Length: 525
Image (cartoon, rainbow, N blue to C red; front, side):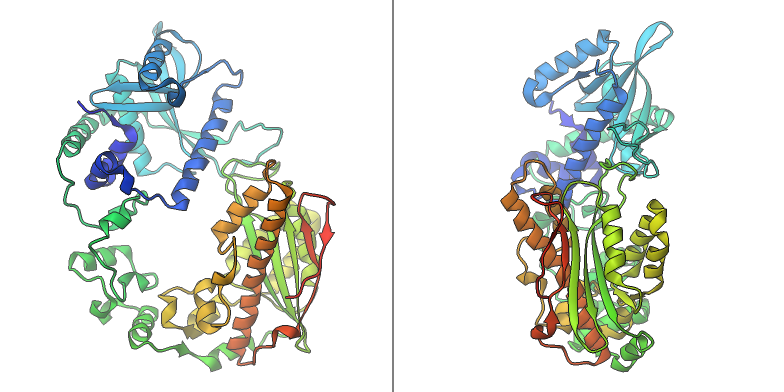
């Protein structure tokens, strides 16, 4: 009998074809950068869980990579039979399945040893697939002869505030799933039997592509499964905010192209996208855009943030997954038409929040609109900074009062077919201002890459040369975000674009974490 891991059984629950490919054609799997990053977060949270559940460090860790499967299962069985200490990654093998439990805690029940099973997740709430996950794990453990007294799921409590000093007690919040988990043993047994049948098939199951390819996980076999399905010239996915249920119904009817979507299913915005995409025409309400901007005076300031978030906080006073700003770029257009740029970037590895807030207050000045793209993001970060640093609350709140969002203006007044239903600045900029493009950047070209670069820069083993390289890449990326807003503002205002020589140098406060604590360097915008 083939023994299927818990992860493969969960893959089967998502899609039988995925299970078959995981076993027979694993070389076809292509995990996205996001998927790989989520694995790393999971490992980090697992390490912290060991500190939480074993503060005295008396527990045992099963390491299948170094011990090998047979030795890991054998040592797990011995420890589960007589240990009085926590066991991490204990392995079970029975009924054609195998699993490794994050945490097993010993309990005495009626004079007999039993175990409290804890499955640790890096999410902030219990998901349906988590329930299936623990049901499979508990079933295999019990089938292997382990007395499981209770089963809990430990998720991250996003409201918890890190007190510092590597004290992570309270990071994880437990949900008892014992009753429903034990009640699903028959259900799990049926899943395992069907999974075994699928795994034994000589050919892959005939399963078409659909929403299951991305729910609850992005499947690494999507490219393989889509190889015989050339993308539509005008995919239905380009329709903004088109309900997933409606998209599924259309797919079931074989409708995957905008040209076949009935007009009566579309709202005004979706109809506009369909019309101008198919006609290859640009929609631009120039009068309306200029009217939207008319009430806002000068000097005009254009602002963009870059933030990082950690599942496990590393700075005192911060929460899990809290967006911590570490960089901003700011362009200012004077009443006389002079454009200048300033920036802040902290790569010291210390909490950048207070220094960021102070630099932001100075850079924004006291008058004129502060243009952003998607205001809810920047204003939320500014509000959080005001709450964390009450002595800065008044000037930070004053900045928020001046914020003007360019996104709804773009969404209501402009659409180019190349945007493919998106109004992200990275979609609108090359459409409205073809001379500018994020493709010309090196190293950092989007927010996810900026976060990865920041995390690399603050690592202790990152060389000075590499940190300097990352510094320049981050400055260039964030600077383009605000320069893009300047160009869009000019486009929407019907004004001529200034020559690059019209842009004057301005200071950038950079805290690279090497050499002096703060370096001011002027560069042209």
